[in-house]
Amino acid sequence: MAKQYVTVARAQQNKALSNVSSAILTDLIGAASAMIAKYCDNDFTQQSYTDVLDGNGLPVIQLRQVGLTALTSVTIQENTTSTSIATGSFTSDASTGRIGFAESNTSSFTYFPRGYQNITIVYTAGQATVPEDVQEATVQAVYALYQNNASQNNPNVTKEKMGEYSRELRDTNTTMALTQTVKDLLFGHVRFEV
Image (tube, rainbow, N blue to C red; front, top):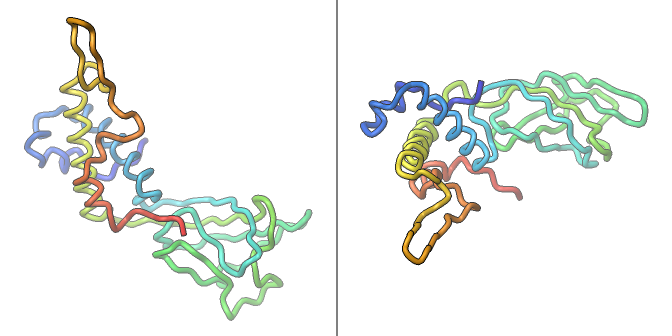
């Protein structure tokens, strides 16, 4: 099932969506939630992840998700040897999604050895409850998607004329549902690469 950052009932609190069928809203919520996750480069639902990463030669490594709640396992592959390291050997920063070797580390590793996809980390990340501003952004994006589909037969066409044929297409590089209001609501949640 697609991620759902809001329930149908929450979406129907928006008066413009109150009479939209549950089936349509479920599809639109899934699409809006996926767009928001991609835009923010983060998933807001709590779940288990397995990251297979390139070793960077440093004592810290960046996970793909933020909001780390539990570290399940860390495995380092070096040549033909695979070593599991106790999760207590690491510290983490949930807000940035970075883990690093703790001072109390007793393993033979003090850094993540350079290599191609030689680090496997299993962890749980996300939030038990999707933040309210992300929920509201999702509802606003659902509304924009619904309006876009309801008002246009071809969602890629903004203008069309029959006499002396004329046609203008939307910029397909921008997502119409991610309005400025949606982007403003998501501002504090967008991950920027450093």
